[in-house]
Length: 401
Image (cartoon, rainbow, N blue to C red):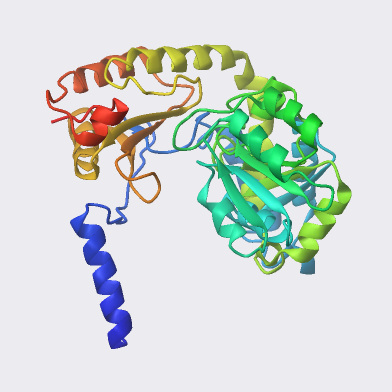
């Protein structure tokens, strides 16, 4: 390897290792019918092993083969892809749709191609990295408003709204690191007043929320006002890929003609597409009647942990963030949960979250024994250190032995 490059790589990895921020891949065997509890996965509705969804994927394999074999613009946009688009549009209340290979790809494509020079893009400070990466490829002005602070957002809208530019507002519905969400009805009122272009990422809300499992946008009744809805197929929809939905047919045409992420990638596999189609049906016919139960149990679980985590966001989303602060302690606690209780959780460290806010992220699911989990976590965290670290003093987060 070239000497200068080798030195750069070595120094980067050394710094990551010394600060306990080095990421490594470990093959994790997720076993069916195991007593292990995998709360590091985003299978919120536990559909990844549902027999009807597996059957649908197997049928698609037999009919269409294992791969779509190419780009959607040169022959690999098939009837099964079109069928999924139609189902998603009807489910979520939009007129047009487009499938993507991942949510990251979709967000990056949208934000790198839609905003133009002199435009302004207002994003929640905690919005996903894919949005920020997409913005790097534009000449538009990016401004991050304070997390969930719609007063700050309105101040910026008042300042930057002008007839000669487009102002974009980008938010997640459920935020992936906090598990909280904005008041989408209040955002709709802001849109009525300032006429911005509204993009909402429903990655962690689709399936979990909505009168038909169709997300928080549907829960708040703002489908008609959202210009682009983005969501993933790889979480509650038990598959892989993502989708965007629109009310303007020209948006769909523009993106499939303009974005290299769509044009130059082999398209979604038939099996993944069929699995998502089946998941939409199962959510509406089998699961939606239980929604109020899992929302209530989720909120109860979070309330039970506020003694240890007083700043825990009390929302009924499936994301449970337990902020520890120190990355080394966070890693150790995760290892102890796995060793002592066979509970596997996400370990989230900078740069995915701000320095001093390393956390255990638990992805809850609808089939959890919520009371049992609450008792295990309460027992596990019952001995906080008497002396808190500097960050903990400022934020109220506990640092544990």
